[in-house]
Image (cartoon, rainbow, N blue to C red; front, side, top):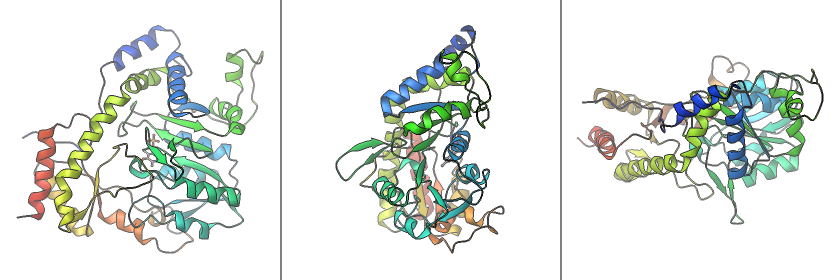
Length: 382
Ligand SMILES: *Cc1c(COP(=O)(O)O)cnc(C)c1O
């Protein structure tokens, strides 16, 4: 029997063609034709004031930390249950990370726990839209406004996901905070192997973001003919991707609706296939979140304990199905445990021990879905 991997990057078919076009265009460094097409796509579809492709979400987060002028000793609040890049970007600038626990019903940060973590040194809140499910952005933006803090959305997993406001509004994730970082790593819905984007929603950051992304120079202005020479005007690095990466990404963007529709079918098929196990108390499925759409980035289940999860991983593997757990709480990591100043974060640890991600990629077919859900059922119901 074929094995089912955890992830398989989906190619729409046009990637190679667009890469060839980019190569033929004679401008394969950054900010070529395809980069501009991608920027326009994101700005028009999601209403970001400015969109800038980067070589990764990690880079976009590092740009955000520079833009909000993080200084040594500044504090940044974020969930402990997240990827290292969320915190690394701020640690690189000398910030102290103040970790917030996850919600009991969802791995996203507990919005009601944020305010108690704020001190006079707090500079920013970094919500992570885990599995593309929105954090309660009205609540977070209100806290930030009252305490004069920046909000940087880690929207790595949140492409084409929306926050549903209490006023009936539907706003794209990444368009709400001052800044937002997206990932196009091959494990994400829309991908270019490695890749990312900084979305800027506050005009104050637009000019400086272009400079930081171009090694601290005003080269972008020069290329647009707005200045007659360019030079070193600020700190920065090389955060922009080659147009070859953008060409790949653009082929994916043209197929965004199809990709999202297919992933949603897979997600729904998991949900329906495993509901019975939730009803019988064997596991928990992702909860309904009234303030978020679902972009089908991930399908995860929560087991009752770590031992059951380990055994289920083995059972799936014995049947050729590859499932993976996710983050190790950052406040317990070898690098940060001794620096962590807060208390226990039991919800984060619970997801660290009990959350399991199931295979999720475009090419999963109904027969695969039956096989995966059937194998999970056979583990619990002998
Ligand atoms: C994938 C991911 C990142 C990192 O993205 P890269 O593009 O690989 O740098 C950061 N944060 C979260 C929450 C992610 O899921």
